Image 1 (cartoon, rainbow, N blue to C red):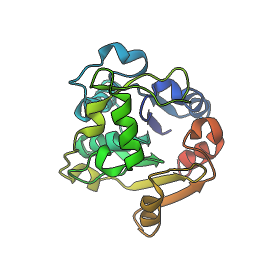
Image 2: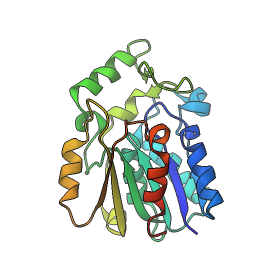
Image 3: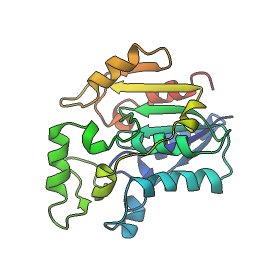
Length: 223
């Protein structure tokens, strides 16, 4: 049995992974979807102080309170920042695999703002124009999406590398079926890295809607 900790991307709550979590549980695994502070059903906890560090603490709190060991951390889009930080800070034996789903893969000192494209930076700025600290969802997203804390996109990640060095398996799932993806060059680089297993799916960025079965197969590979 594996324990999958499922962290959604920007604007999305744990509901994004509800169907996947049910399927994983039916297959005999443990699945823990996470809603980050200030988003989804936790939107009432938002504010200018909510940042990337807050979201890393959210995941670490789930790992601790659920007494998770040998976790598979799955992060979609922005959540690549979060699972990287959580894996780096987790105690030995807590995290053993990272799965990045069309997600940012940061190094020490990187921010989502710096890693993304100018088009997405403009989305962040335009979305935060109303109050200056929460980014409204872009048009066309699921109606359940809520504003996302701007500071989490801007804050630079601090890593010491010790926790990440313990991770045995790293997967990158590249979604090729949408225009404007900021992840093409990253996927091409990781595909040449023997420390990574890379996968390419002909899907839009909303992979849980468009290719959930393919994601399930990747998650269950070797579990």
